[in-house]
Image 1 (cartoon, protein in one colour):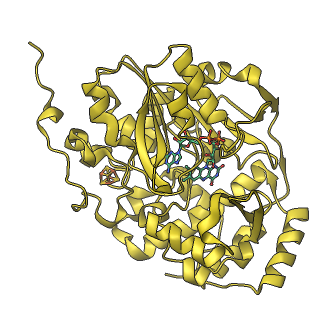
Image 2 (cartoon, protein in one colour):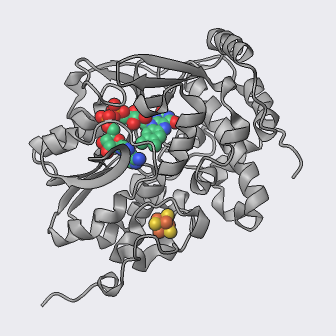
Length: 398
Ligand code: FAD
Ligand code: SF4
């Protein structure tokens, strides 16, 4: 007879009931399963432990001497890539979906945790364990809302799956790594995306309504490297809104408190990360963190055009200027925002320097948020690499 593991006696929380991390909960889904048993150690907002988990997962934590390490995390390779034949309707060129399909068809995994949408709402996440490439493809494109990816972990164990791929964002992956040993898997593969400024479904509606000319027809959007938000509409048209024209005064409280307290933009604990912000416009940015990530990437390498990452410009002045502007909720008139967008696109940071710009802007903003809203959490919640990054800037007094 197999002994019952301690977590199997625990009870998942009921939907809508208060969560251990309270307002900081990112709804990662762990508490929707009996793995809630481990929540005090595992939750990214109760116990930030990125350095320890990096050492366990990648064999080392970030090297303090390497600026690339503090910014982009432990890695053995970075590159820009795009699919030679992009998947129509994917967020970018569909490298994430292609990789997951390949892992299923080559029988490396028996299931893939990914996020489809509900039949009624294209942005409402519906987490599934995909067993076929068709089910993976039905999860393409971002659902830009908090998503309980770990809520299916109990079902994974009950289905007896032993080889699993999880696709997810940083807070989900931190909790996943913390309970990895309890999942009874022979092999876990983790394919991460960077993530920032996520919102609840209601918050997303507010963002769309304050920013887009036609909120109800938006099918896809992204904050792009050309300093504009690109909204794609149902009719195929693209709407561009400059970052500097966003109504920051109305949007200040739209982002989830969890995302305002997060310093894991680059998904430090995934084996392989696929984003866009360190790559030229139109390309995806790939960070291979360890040997497992390398093996995963090799599966789709022949489907990709690849080029080295590059870095151009100097972000520091733009970041320093954006700190008080965001803090005071400054919104420029649209003509000035467009003009500033054009100028900064020409002379502003590109490639890895754009990624550093985005990391610096978000880390300084989040540091200020925590310092004001949760001063008692500041020391433990901010990892050492993020403290170093923030220390490069002059912050407003408390
Ligand atoms: P696709 O093939 O379209 O696949 C998308 C995958 O995302 C699907 O497998 C799906 O399961 C998963 N997914 C969808 N919604 C969610 C969700 N809410 N939570 C977890 N997983 C989800 N990259 C950057 O470089 N900078 C950023 O600031 C950035 N912010 C992001 C914010 C969010 C909320 C998300 C989900 C991703 C973000 N990314 C960011 C990653 C980027 O937008 C693309 O997702 C990534 O480059 C993969 O593109 P693709 O075409 O290969 O993905
Ligand atoms: Fe639970 Fe996840 Fe919320 Fe933390 S973030 S309280 S682990 S659901």
